[in-house]
Length: 85
Image 1 (tube, helix red, strand yellow):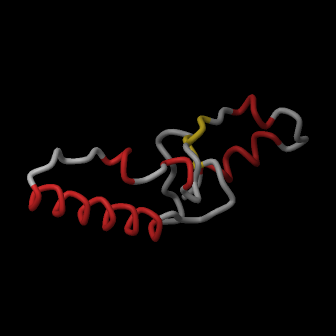
Image 2: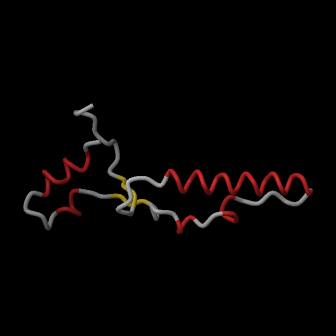
Image 3: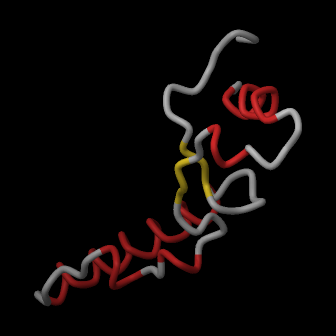
């Protein structure tokens, strides 16, 4: 695995390693609301109606290129290190 590399340089905007716990919590909440809506005959809610995407630990994604590292002396080395998994 030491030689595996990212195919695209897209990273989450955060210092958080993972937002899996938040995704599980949000999906659980959504499934609960869908079950309630089906039982009462109401309209099924959208995912965006039940959870706030901007409240998650990772607030979206960003695309990085070598140009973003140009202010470092070792820009190529840093970019290569970021591209390793």
